Image (cartoon, rainbow, N blue to C red):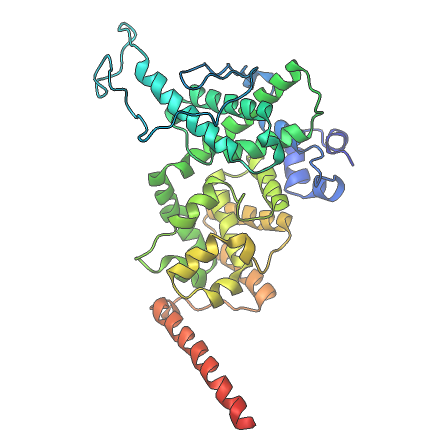
Length: 403
């Protein structure tokens, strides 16, 4: 059934759509979203509050070595060969460390122009390697994506630096809007698509800047992710956080900055994004709880196959290919949402109960006592490793004796 018509007929308000349709899972039972039927419209409904929020994107200016306009063919791969990238012009009108020009002082704009040129070159390179869908190899799509990213940097001076990952997040948004529309769009309809994509991306990035700032990401791990994991599953906390000689940032950077795009199948990722766009819970807390639930889903794999930090990093960076157990994505989001609510009310006993019941039902695992078992987790892992090696050594001998 068509999602747009279903939503209009069934849900009178956005609140009902959020609570019953998405978090209640009703739209996933009725509407077919597998073929991109209406998801772009759904995201516009959830994120864009009227046309007042959507401003007209400006054109990308033509710069030296970047002679390109949105109406012309792109030339992102034709670049001057440079042995060393020029970070600052050799001849500048003012000292680069000088306080920026005030309103009454005229500035040359030369430094900003060079910086913008470098950003556009990096954006062109990233977009040329975007593999979410074949449409991103089309000149028109590349030009529109480039224009959206340029406008985002222009309108968000506090986050004016472009970082790798922005193009993939925008690509997922753009793809949903593009899939919902006909290919023979007029110029006015294409402009509207750009405006909608820019608005959704901009509102998403207001919550994502935390994950793209390394200092704030470290604080988030220490103050939110680790405590939630420790509350939900002490055994997994021991595996991920007990060793002071390693850092989880090696894998958390990709998990958080790309919102599970590399770790989960596409249909799972899209459903998770549906829930994130509802704004029902703070994104940083919901992401922490989603990661914890994903780890609980693969409890057995983590406990049995992770012997040291190298094993852990290898598994977490190849998570999708190593997944051995996954619940339905709607149930996964519901469980993460419940943990969010309980975390904000500091009802840790209920959090423990939810996770204990999950592990008991799914893996027949009882919660370990929070005392001696957690004194030296490294020693316990070494002992388990030795037990497995002894079993592997003795098994051939037993077979020989039986013969």
